Length: 102
Image 1: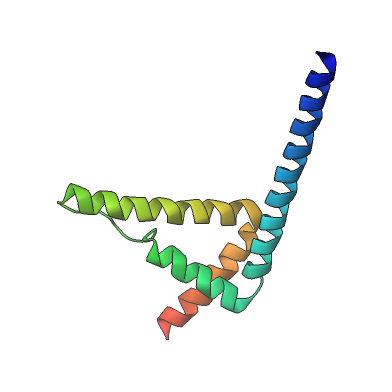
Image 2: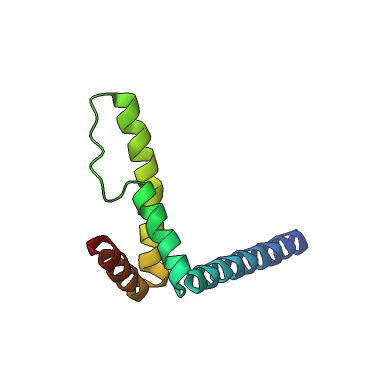
C-alpha cells in the first residue's frame, strides 16, 4: 500500500511541476508579446474589443449577458497583464493614448 501511495505522490509531484513549467512558459511568452509594439497594439485592440473600457448596460438581458461575458474575458486578460508585466500596461496605454489624440 505504501508503494502505491508513494508512486501516486511522485506522479502528482511530476504533474504539479509540469503544470508550473507550462504556466511559467506561458507567462514568458506573454511578456515577450508585450515587449513589442505590435504585440502591445494587438493586446490593446483585444481589450477594446472585449469591451473593458465600455459601459455594457442594455435593456435586453441577453445582450447585456453577452457583453458582460466578453468583458469578463477582457478583465481576465487585464488581470494577466497586471500579474505578469504591469509596467508594460502603462507603456501600452500611453502608446494608444497618443494615437487617439492625433
